[in-house]
Structure formats: C-alpha cells, structure tokens
Length: 137
Image 1 (cartoon, rainbow, N blue to C red):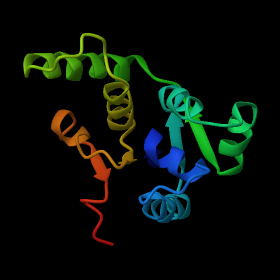
Image 2: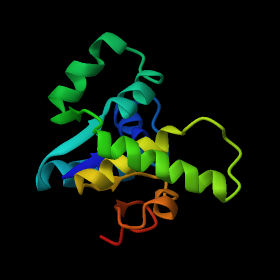
Image 3: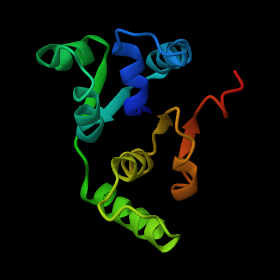
Image 4: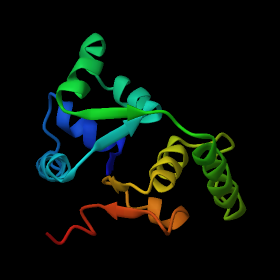
C-alpha cells in the first residue's frame, strides 16, 4: 500500500508544473501499478487548500484510484506521541502539525509514504519513505 502525502497530490493536480512534478507523477504511476493507493482526510484538507476546482476534487481522486481512509485512534495517539517528541526536541509549534497525523497514519497502516519531505523519518523511523533522496530506481 502506498500512502500519498499532500505534496504529491498537489503536484499531480497542479495547474503549474513544479520542478518536482515529473518525479511525483512517476512515483504515482509506480504506486498505482503496485497496489492500493491511499491518503486521508488530513491530506484531503491540505490538497483542497490548493485545488482550483474543489467540487471536482473528490471525483478527481476517485478517478485516479486514490482511496481516502479515515484516521484511526491508534494513528491519532501515535501522532500525539510524535508531536510530544517534537516539542521535547525544541520544536516551536504549539498545535499539532498535519505531518505528524499523516506520518503516524501511514506508519500505523504499514504503508509506504510517498512524499517530498524526508523529515518524516526523524519522528517515524519505522516508516518506509519514498522521497527524491531515497529513490534510487
């Protein structure tokens, strides 16, 4: 199972092609070929903030075979623990960050997270990441 981070879906749906968009498109194609592709409502919210046609966002994700899975209790608790560690390390934010919810959810699902943000590894060492830095394929 591949869990797509917001930045990947934004690249895929974006009107303007970011330099990373080709990488994201290639990783998305591989993900679809390998099995289920998912995101969650946290990713959906972040993508909606960038989507020009919000009414069409859900149909677009469905057409792309991206399933939206609900955040579980276990994922929520794990995100809170990661955020606590962030604060212990001196993190300045006082409200939980979306990345902690996304990373925890992918980890609890046992999914591989496709993202352009390698910082997930710092708080979720057991989470398998596909990033531009780790992608050797």
